[in-house]
Amino acid sequence: MLAALDNGVKGNKWFSLIDKAYRPSTLQRAWEQVKANRGAAGIDGQSIERFAAQAERHLSELAKDLEAGHYRPQAVRRVEIPKAGGKTRPLGIPTVKDRIVQAAVKRVIEPIFEKDFLPTSYGFRPGKGCKDALREVDKHLKEGHIHVVDADLKGYFDSIPHDLPQARIEERISDGRLLDLLAGWLRQDIVKELERWTPTGGTPQGAVISPLLANLYLHPLDERMAKLGYRMVRYADDFVILCASAEQAQAALEEVKAWVEANGLTLHPDKTHVGDCRIDGQGFEFLGYRFEAGKRWVRKKSLQGFKDKIREKTRRTRGDSLKRIIADLTPMIRGWYGYFKHAHPWTFPTLDGFVRRRLRALLRKQEKRPGLGKCLADHKRWPNAYFAALGLFTMTEARRLASQSRCGNH
Image 1 (tube, one colour):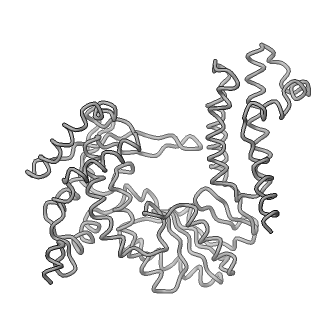
Image 2: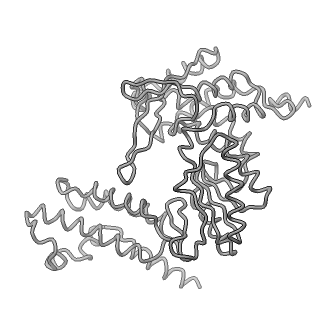
Image 3: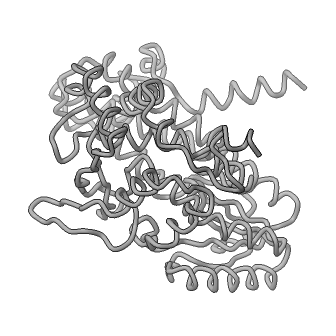
């Protein structure tokens, strides 16, 4: 018992944590994390660069304010981020100082809750990621669990009731000052242009602490589904349940509906469904992919997002040399392929062709030859090999080389 007290644990609760959050070493690591993630300035207008110019002084002031109990979070600046289809999603931008304190507190409390979280949860967790979640989905599908509940929580980050995550935090933490910090972040004012209000629910999507709170809130759903024997794979608020029969899938959906309703959340009626992913039109989407007819495709929104990025980097008014444009494009294309390389192979020649058409159009513009876009002359003048020689990464070639490597290893 004495050893537990020395470590800040009494019974099942941690009672001495705030001092660990304002240690200079913790704040320094938190600042390095925030700096690496970059991001815009908050409501106070202080950018990462301005903070960095006097980081040592700012961190020292933060430590003193936290120790004395004087630290108070500032309002969160809200902006609308464009989505595919002309829609937007809200993004909350805390101040740099608030992001640092949140990162410091997260470093302290995350290990406590990580001990409880289940392996079926993959989002925003140490050592886990999208590819791990997708591998788990593939495994269940290969085992015959092809009847899938595809669930979508409507406005999840904005609709989490404040009282329930606080109650779940208090089950493991009794440090009053740290609990006050967490409560303050949940109730930070939101500022959008000339509007300002105090939220009655939700946690800002964009705040450092939000993913941990989101996982904490959905952890009981993970536990319930596991206890009932369902194979659920969750990445933050995006989850699927893979079942062996249509009846089992329908029963799983009813369990989810009951839990969601009891916990103050809402399932999106148009985006939640049950289907047999072997059948055309009954597939499901998860983490950028669409699983349908026994194959893995890139979902339409992800394809559109890729094309939009290519269009942005290949504007005809761009004055850079082709070599510089290709140097700008290649890391983005390589990264996109690295994530989607397991999609159906038909995907990649089409996208490679789209990229080269954009580059040829740009070259025509530079040479003031706008009317030749559909002529074979373009391909003769600038063949595929021309772009390859300038270093353009092509997904078709990368897939061919990967396939040869796999065959060679066998």
